[in-house]
Image (cartoon, rainbow, N blue to C red; front, side, top):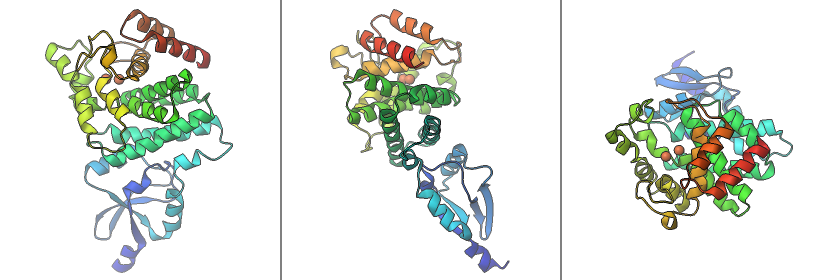
Length: 322
Ligand SMILES: [Fe+2]
Ligand SMILES: [Fe+2]
C-alpha cells in the first residue's frame, strides 16, 4: 500500500466525541505515532478502557483515528449516547443499571484523575446525573441494583457514586426535594470530596492515625475542592456549598469554618448522612466495612453530628429496599 492510500485510510476523530458512549465498539480506534504510523489502541474485542483514554488526555493527546471504511459505524456509535439509550422504553432494570454504571465509570475516571477537572468533565457529569435522576424517577427499585454494581469499583468510585446515589434517594424519599434540586444533590454527592484528589495519596489513604499536620492537610479538602470548580457555570451554588460545607457540624465543631446549624446550608445534613453511612459500610485502609445495621447504630450514637430526621429516613430506605 502506498503512502497516499495509507493516509487516506484513516480519519481523525476527537476523543471528546467518545463521552457518554458505551465501551463496546464495532470498529477499531488507532493512535497516530508518526506520519503513516497508526497503532490500534481500542478494538472491537477489547472495547474502550476509560482509564487509558484519560491517560492519553494527560499526555496531551486529544485525537484518535478510525479506518475510513468505519466512518458510518463511528457516526452511528457517537450518535446514540448511553443517556439516550436509557430513555428507550422497556429496558430491563439490569440494563438500565449497567448503562448508568458505564456512564458513572467514565465520569469518575475523568473527575478523579490527576488532571485538573474541566468544564467539559462537569458537563458530562451533569448529563450522567440527569440520567440517574430520570432513571430513578421511572424505576425507584433500581437503588439496590446500582449499589451492587457500584461496589465493584475502586474506593473513590464507590464513594463518589454511592454518596451521590444515597443523597439522591434520600432527597427523593423525603418528598420535599424538587427535581432540579435532586440533580443538584446528585452532583454535590458526587463531587463533595473532589478536593481529596489533589492532596498527597500517602495521607489520604494512610492506614494509621493522622498526626496534627496531616489532619490539617486533610481538612483543607473542602477549600481545595471549591477552588477546582471555580468559574464553572454548570455547577450550581448548592453543589459549591456541599463541597465546601460537608464537614461542618451543627454544634460548630466541624471544619473549615466551624459553622453552626443556622449558618449551614439546608442540604448539608442530608449529604452528611449519606457520606457518613457510605464511609461506614465501605472497607477503609484502617478497618473492615461495617454492616448496614452497625453503620446505622454508629451514626445514631454520634449524637449531634448527624441529623436524626435524615438518619431515620435512611434507615427506612435501606431496610425497605435492601
Ligand atoms: Fe470530605
Ligand atoms: Fe466523603
